[in-house]
Length: 205
Image (cartoon, rainbow, N blue to C red; front, side):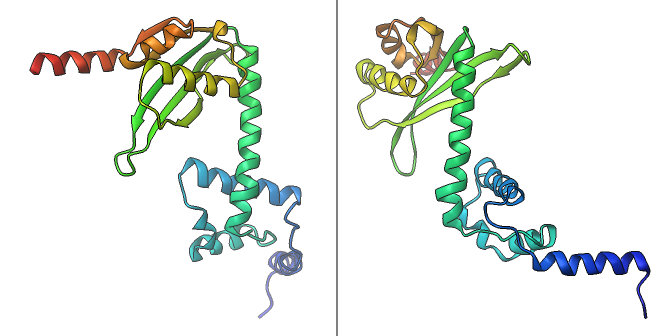
């Protein structure tokens, strides 16, 4: 039984194009690399997802000309490239704003017992009039949580983006980090939730 003309043409086209795979650096391949990179980073998927059977079937059906690279290609090329692109974009936005605010937090991972210091930036994008709140750094913090050490690691984090302390209007910290912020010359505000938590703890002791 012959297929209708339109279906016959589409089938022939698919048969032809299916044989012609895009190069790994083809602009169409790069776009799909980025989409998969977003899936891995934003949805917190493992790099091994590119080896999953159903995921491979999905990619082949959606993009028959696309050859899915191995996990190493994503970990060593795609994700670092996306990071560099995002880093440059955030750095450019920070340099363009005059009203920068920070929040910082110290915590220890329950399982591995590894301590971290995070720094988050806050500002208003004047072109879009929208709030920007990127996490600027998450730093391994092996030292004791003293004001001096916190100040040192804060400086390291801010130097990455070439941020001057004079540009920061104020920083919101937990109570342990207030002295570090003051020693750095920044105006600091204690975290309301952390302060409330301490009050409840002291009153129930």
